[in-house]
Amino acid sequence: HSATQPLLVYFIDDEPTMRMVYGSWVRSPSPLHPDSKVFPPPDLPAAETDEAMRGFAGHVLAARPRPSCVVLDQNLRSQVMRRENATTGTEIATALRAGGYKGSIVIRSANVSQKVINEYLSAGASAVMQKDEPRERLVQLIVE
Image (cartoon, rainbow, N blue to C red; front, top):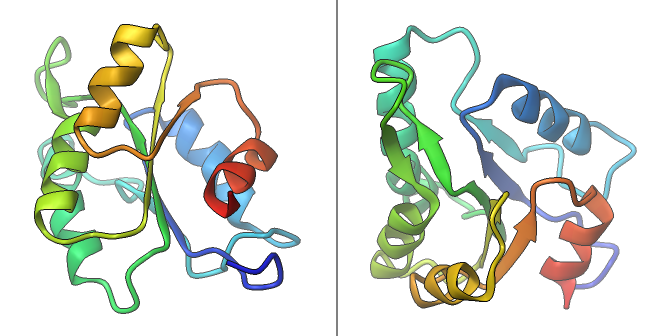
């Protein structure tokens, strides 16, 4: 990737505040492509939000062009059963790699112990980012 080519990135997070942050990351001026997308879409009913999160890998694989990077939250909490995950970053990463996705997969997590990082990488992640790291760090990870 040349630095001049805007990066098409798809983000997924169960927290509306985090989705707002990602939305601001995409708005220009940004190194990210304006067609970058944040999932799940806002204002869906709870059950549909869960479906959107579970369907994320399929959405990425069907996209033309496919995003050059996906940023996954590890614990994607169900909006219906609050104490359960609708899906996880590692499940999505595994599905993407199984589907032939060749782009960067970045999993963001509050827990970045070595054991956890190894787990994410073995699921197909290219990199792991802490929850509070800025957009610049993400761009660095993708471009490297």
